[in-house]
Amino acid sequence: MRVEVFDDYAGLSQRASDLVAGLIRTNPASVLGLPTGSTPEGFYTALCRSGASFQGVRTFNLDEYVGLPREHAQSYYTFMKQHLYDHVDLPPEQAHIPNGMAPDLEAECRRYEETLRAAGGLDVVVLGIGLNGHIGFNEPGAAWDAPTHPVMLAQATREANARFFGSLEAVPTRALTMGIGTILRAHRILLLASGSAKAEIVKRTVEGALSISVPATALQSHPNVTVLVDRAAAGMLSSVA
Ligand code: GLP
Image (cartoon, rainbow, N blue to C red; front, top):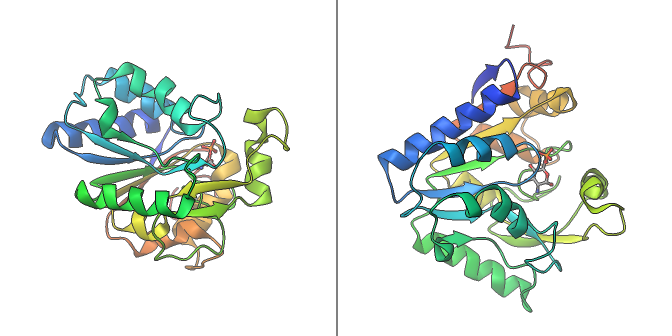
């Protein structure tokens, strides 16, 4: 894993954008795996300003809540519309998010995985990280070879995300997520983390033992991972001065 440390959130966001925009310029038909959450907001702002054309790009989001209509204020579709889709020339049919309202969730996951496979797989996947080490919605204990699948959200994750919903009860209990197997098949992985609250999980991810109880440690087994962190998130890394 390569670790790049930036003075602040703006620096890591710009770097993530530069890397992805550069990839799109090199290959205008790039296939991107994309995250949601607070951490990537700055990355999306910079990416929308980069001037890169998304005309030939295909995007696949990591995850979506089960049971929220697309138009719900907290759906990941709405997040993507606000942070990316409304600001770039990405054709709507090339923007993919699992459908958490599908009548057959298992079938929806198989369809999603097949659409991704038909697109040629992910050239790059950008990840945030949960405080418990989840990536996408792969919670502690998730299998490292799993494809896209339905999951129950960990209580800690629902509590962390309650701030967006106004109350814990309003947070969905289930989601659809790319599996760790799907993520590990990407050619390149960028992991973004910001702030001192993430310092401990960043340390465990980069320097800790591989463990299925810390899903992000699976990334240590991938040959092309870049971790972009600000000084606060890098605060507990022994390898960083
Ligand atoms: C959510 C998302 C993850 C994200 C995580 C961290 O649960 N499913 O993909 O990485 O939250 O979010 P934040 O960046 O807001 O800390």
